[in-house]
Image (cartoon, rainbow, N blue to C red; front, top):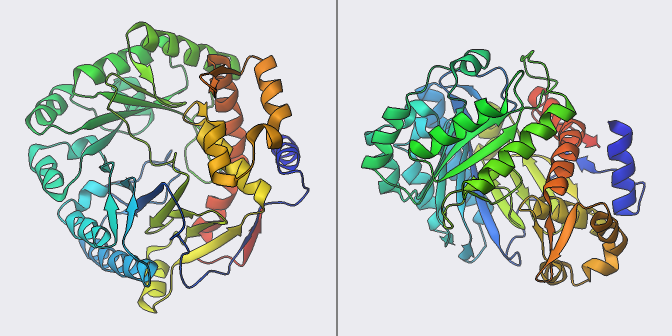
Length: 416
């Protein structure tokens, strides 16, 4: 795994230089010149912590949550100091369970709207228990337009395996019918041990019957620092499962909108990742700008202490080489299943084919991409190749980084 990702990185960046993160941070964020900017806010609190979840999360307490919101508002003011109001594409709240603080999110949204004009809506992640009429009405009043509900599975067998409580489709449908949103996305985990196509198809069908117009099928990945002991599905089984659900979605008129997402309506979309640049606020939130990538500390206590001193809570910073930034851009652009040579040229001022002509030629020869209207589009074969490699990338880079940050509030550095 390590050798594969290392050789791939060296080939695509045309350098043996690793991704070198430092513990240093800038006193301000140079985002004024960044176009297609998105916003992300992390709320790390949960009623209970799932052992399979790799994200930054902590048991909820009203006192700690209140202090966190205060610190979050302070970070927003620190990050935006000296900047003019800027138009951004979107705002997403992730977690954790952001809806636990639904009565405070309007404060965070108002603070951000004081510095940014949001053009494509506001999204919030919810636990199924939070899909109630009062909570949905509170979110609507705050300006939320998109929901992402972490179902994981409707099947009792997999709910038990994941340590989750049963989910009532009827209650979801009734609440979502009473308080409609532009996008309602249901998140599922696929490639769970023993999971069949019939299991996954049942989840998907029930999702659309219960009020979803968008679904996300995220692959199960066993992170080294979680307590989960679930076995990982084999490559051949995973490929067959992904191919069959993709064919089923196409047959039933649900369009693929990214590697792992499908929509029953053209206007339904939910993705906080496919942005050329974004600003992140809160514990573990990341910021991606043209020349740098930053990640905040994972510790709520260290986060609040750093912000209270008038400093940004950045734990690690990567300053990209030009080729490293190109690889990052292409990786997350391809997540949408499309790569536009014009978009690449607009962003970097260089030709995509001039920089990676051989790689795209080879990808076409291998049947991974096809050319449609002047853009590269991932084929089903290419989607699985992306999915398969993404698993290596996650375990080589994200797992290592998050493992370190879960143990050290402000590491001195990290090489990947």
